[in-house]
Image (cartoon, rainbow, N blue to C red; front, side, top):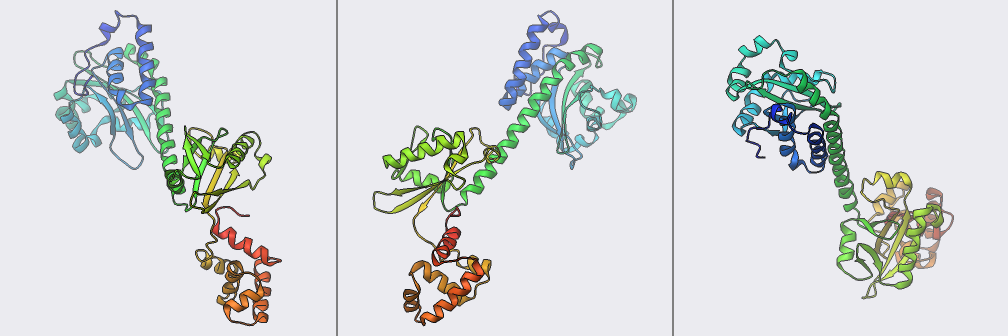
Length: 392
C-alpha cells in the first residue's frame, strides 16, 4: 500500500473476518518488517485497519531532540508530513508520550486537556484539515538512547479511541516491541561490524578470520589483495586454500584444532611458510581466538583462527623510532641494535659501522641492560616483535 493512501479497512470490516487469522497474519508481517524495513508501510496499514484506525506510524525521539522523528508511516499525505517536521512536531501532543511508561496506551485526552487541544494551532492547522480526531499511542521501546512510539490515528468517522481499539493494540504491542528491538540490535551489529572491518583494514599484514572448516569469515584489505593475486593463497568456495599441499593440510588441522580446543595449537599459534610463484617468501601466523574474542568479532559466523600473512622482510627501519623510544636508546645504541639484526655479530657490525669491536660490545651491553635481552638472538626477536603482527 502506498504511504500516501488512506487505510480503508476499519474495525467494522475486520470484525466480520476471522480475527485470529487476521491477527496471525499481522504478527507474521511485523517480524518480516523487522528484517525488511521496506515492509512497514504495508504492515502499518494492516494494523491500522485491524485496530480501527485510518493512519499509523512508528515514531522515535532521541533525548537530545525536542521533536519526534517519523520513521515509518501510512495514511499521511507527504505534504503534511513535511510541514510536521518543519513546523508542528514540537507542538504535537505526542511529544509528551516518552514520559509515559512503556506498553501503556495513551490517547490525546490523556496527554493534554482535549478542549485546549481543539483550540490549539496544531489541531486547527495540521490535524483537523486531515480529519484527525484522536490518536492511540504506545511506547514499544524506551532506553537512554531512544524512545520508540507506535501510533494509530482515528478520524471523525471512527470517533475517539475506545476500549476495543486499546484491546487490539495491546495484542500487537509486544510483537512490535520485539520487532523494534531486533531491528535495533541488527543495526547496532552492522555498525560494530563496519567499525571492526575499518580497524582491521588499517593493518599492513593480510588478515583472515577463519572458521573450523577454513572458511573465510572476514578478510581485511591487505588479505583481499593477497587473494586477488591468486598465488600462494586462494579462495575456493569461500575456503582459504594454500597452494602448497602440506601447508594447506596444516592450516586445516590448525582450524579444526582451534575449533575444539585453542590450547591444542598453543597460545602463540603456529607459523606456516609460504612461497609465491616468483620465489618471494611469506609467513602466515595462525593465532587461535578465545571464546570472548570470537563473540566480540560481531560477525555472523564464529571465527576460530586469525591468520596474519606478510612478506618475509625484517622491516627494522619502520619501527626504529618506536623501539628507540620504548627502551630509551641513544642514537648510537639504536644503530648497533639494527645493525645486529641486519648484519650479524660483533665483528661484522664493527666493520659495517666503522667502529672498534670494543665500542660495539659496550653498546651491546647497554642494549642487554635496557631491553632485558640475554643474547643477540633475543635482540633479533625483539625487533621482529615490533615488525610482525604477532609477538614471538
